[in-house]
Length: 368
Image 1 (tube, rainbow, N blue to C red):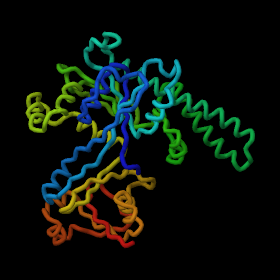
Image 2 (cartoon, helix red, strand yellow):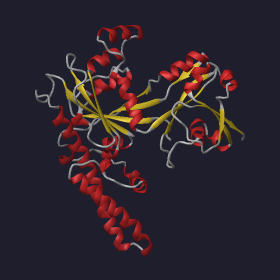
Image 3 (cartoon, rainbow, N blue to C red):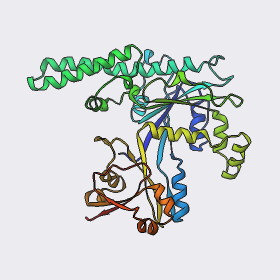
Image 4 (spheres, helix red, strand yellow):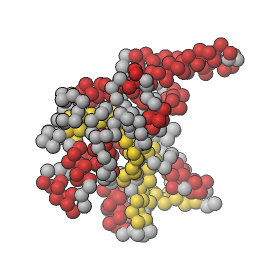
């Protein structure tokens, strides 16, 4: 898989998406001016909070601790009626298409800068989703037109594949015209693979973020926001979270205590992105480094294998793979040391087809 999983942050003007970007990344990018105008995409890479990494570092005291990471992209170019007027410009569409998941921000706070004074996150989310639906519908219709042209010239042996693609895209068009997401269309793994190259926006896992004001209830009912497949929703007070993210650790801890917050909501948001994308972490440990590595829970044949995990570390480990020495995180904590784990028989050897479990500690034996 590519080195960094990418999550695109999008929202209608004045929803506060750059505030969320700042909160997630600890950045201090200017808010308020970066919305529907076309411009460069802001990016930042953040660690995936993981108490298991902290605990393992406490055991091994490594010279270096490395967390799993996600790249967040603050994407401009989305506004009401964008698709009907002129469609997304190529820069915005390319930025959206490259993302593995989308974080859709809607305004739930009072703002004198908003285009209208009304707070209606339900309607705002509907408008935002409609823009993505229309963008996908445009792609589907253009491809269907090309398929019809290709069928007229196709050889007999080429027609079945084109006809299968046409049938699948017609089902997608029907769903989009009914304002349903492509993620909600029932299809086989083979059919999903057929659509992968299109990078449809409504097929991407999505976290809906309701950006609240300081005095708002931090746990509102969000059933209206997460009724699509591969979609979840959460609420946070973006301005507070941004302020916390920019404080030194000691001050941030006191700030959280003052507001009765167990941990920044953005930590839960990052983990939710990780979960929706079907990602798991395994660990390598030692005095040099404790590190979290990312693999997909579904690697095409049901689960991430030990061979896939070896490849995530380095291609040489996969090429010369012999065995994987495996220890569960819970057993590591119970034993305290690798020597004790080995003494108790908790370390085991597995082959290349072993299904890696979230939290496994691996040491790859290889020869190249």
